[in-house]
Image (cartoon, rainbow, N blue to C red; front, top):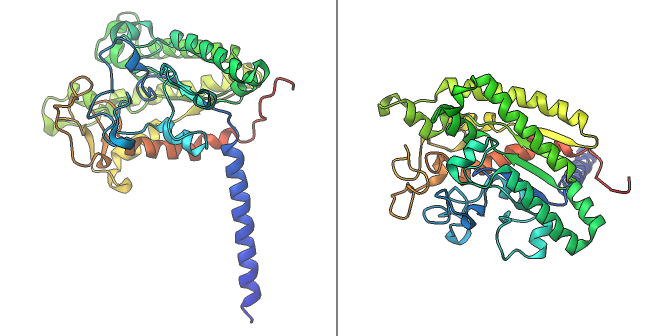
Length: 366
């Protein structure tokens, strides 16, 4: 009996901790009305299926590990980070593309992706890729708001928009297409100037979203661009020499530092907003530099084909693929695997979502 009371007390303390944790978790998951996503192929769940572009992921082997092995238009073997986040937030298992003509009212209300593979903040990027521009994604949001108003009414639609988690993930294509691989913008900018140019475009984009009623933003920085397989291939002819391009990684880190500072200043100006810098560089570089720690094996090549240069449309039904994509950080020569996206989503769940926890819910009557 001497040990009975301490054990009971311990059990009671554990129960209280579990209840508090579950309560906080429930608050966090119910904090958002929906998820609205803008950007490029890292968050395009199928919009490119409905436009004229070579950048499509609606054919095998893309989607090989998606439920029912369906190629949905996602540029990966399975789900994206936003799909896992939507599930974590108890909204839905997957985020549909806005251009899907068969969206139900429930799917519209809980959120969609407006993103397009190949998109970016620089108009030159769109000219090369044929993707849906950021400005066009804004127009699609306006159409979306009209549809939501028709479902729940104007006041509730405004509340839902103000309490939506808005995710913005773009910028990589701008540097790949216009500065590193096709150096068009180098004729008028040095790297610092081009970083500022892109971020000024991003700031305008956020301000437009804010004017339309959005208040909660998670804005992704650049990944470790120099570790993208196709970038390594472009710099190292000899396979034995393959390694991350450190100059490009350093420049991505500087871009991210600038972005974090800019977003803090912008949040101070946009009343009632919460604008969170979303660090994807560190979790991705962690997988690349310490793969065994996280169950990965291959970090410098994609699973599709040789993994050195294949990306849609060169990654297609005739292209051989690796047996186990979960051991690869990259699916093709540009895009991460589902396993990588799942890890990044978990990182964001722990490091980004809690930063919204103590923000008041948006209410038009406040």
